[in-house]
Length: 213
Length: 274
Image 1 (cartoon, helix red, strand yellow):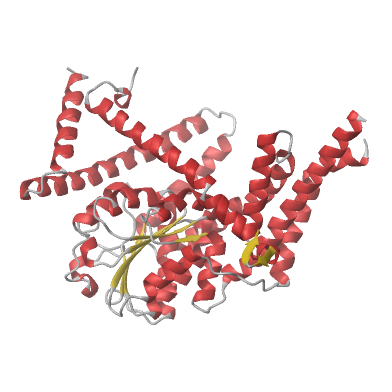
Image 2 (cartoon, rainbow over the protein chains, first blue to last red):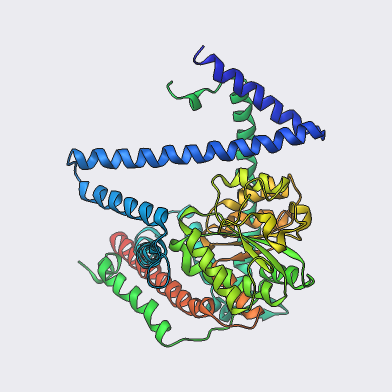
């Protein structure tokens, strides 16, 4: 019963949502709008569960003094501060304390983290992009063309032979032809896979969303 | 270790220092490199340009501080264009860690352009689950957002009177650092037929060119390059144009690193064979 009941709910609701899409009746539209409201409410509860889970996992780590517990402590303190600032909405000098903490801690920290990528990419590209095989060479050439083609400097490498021919044009060709073809294939594959998975969930064949095996 | 072997094993700290120079020097001495307008960016510009004053559009912002350098110039340029055209703009901020940032960005440009909140633009803020939010707005903006970010009921806002759903707006422009455009295409465009434009981080831009060709999105502003093109189109050189100088030099530095590594690799290989 514990497993059958959710399966029946999934089947009935899934089937109804599928059918209502094709039925432009007032009842169908109202049910759909109500379902959207439910989904939003359930979403908020799911978020609350996520927050609780995050809190508990870091709390356990700090309590047991596991390796890296200091980072967990920082997470908990940051979380608690932002929660209290947001809840109390205390106004500081010019803005609320929440905004101050956001603007002067979160923004610089997150921006700095992402900015470091430039250095890691430079180092990784230097080590990884070696023309060891034919496929690696193709990847390397495509990367070089796209990197040059997406910056103004690439414009200097354009030549006029009646028609414009150069790095930006080659970059566009890579984006619009080989990239597009492979992307389409992947997208179609994902689409078909999603349909198959939806049918399996609806029919109760796929049950991993209920937890367990 | 031979010279060519050394070329293959440069210490990463040296690479970091060179990279730092590549980033800092053009910041101090701007190069002013020319930016060419691409059709996909021009399409977005033209779509806004063709609208009449008082027309309503939605700008769905979706970024946070980690992508601020790419997304903020794009959002600024697009909002400046919309506000200069006297359009009514519904702004949503669908990224949890960026809600405050997107609100500040919208308010900053609105104040700069003399826009009044509630009359000329509104900011909806964040709601979880983008797919559900997009579908909800397709029925009625009030389903996912009974109130705006500041807690005002939508019906109390002058601009929102008479606006029900996507049928009442011209199009949606999703400026995003995430895959939120997937949901907009699936549910916004395919289910509710709302025209879509896209502004996206450069690293994800290539994923969405097929949708441009299929007509599911009318234009793309890809990354900082796209933002700098948009700044050129609205004749206002700002941080994206400065950023393109930096990005150009940084790209060239990375290409030189790759070249060094490959020259070293081939010469070493040749030496071994010889």
